[in-house]
Image 1 (cartoon, rainbow, N blue to C red):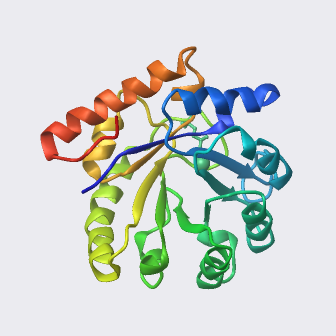
Image 2: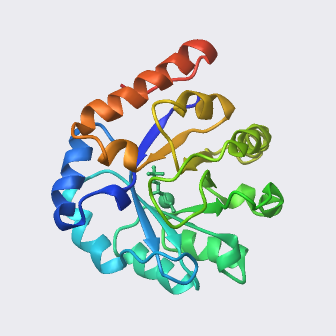
Length: 235
Ligand code: DX5
Ligand code: ZN
């Protein structure tokens, strides 16, 4: 049975108070902590590296979901795995050998995710989907928080859902579809119905004064989907 998970993105947190922000969203009911790593080459923005990941790791027991928007990818995979990342996602355009990078992530005992930009076709998954733990579907162009959700993502999710279901049947293990960018109370139900399992929410959670209320609002929308299509929502 599918389960919906919420992954607040630290990109919209107060970077001067990261430890407090992580404790706050953990107590507020987050499922994962999403850490956006931007290198000013693959994307225009520049954020944090493994030193910060290691420094904030003790402030929660939740899984760290590290989203690498960097090129090259492989040296940072090792550094973030050693800094406490549980899941590492990367963009196929940013590495020469996608299969090798997935193997590298798994060799460190971390889970592996492949991140697809809005214009990246699902065909990139053809020969690697069975190796993945997560398909990260970007619903904005990577680089910044607070952008508007790209509606064409819904069609992509509807095509992806049956492919992931078939891969889970083949492999007998879970593969999650994660959506990243512009997720709000106003659209999360439609995104879930289209096929997503994990919802990254940056500005929707950290932009709210009361993060617990923000997460409850997102979950309440997901509960309406559960009622309609019979999917479990964690309380
Ligand atoms: C964009 C990042 C997202 C971003 C989401 O490159 O990967 O994780 O922080 O922020 P919101 O939810 O504000 O669109
Ligand atoms: Zn992200």
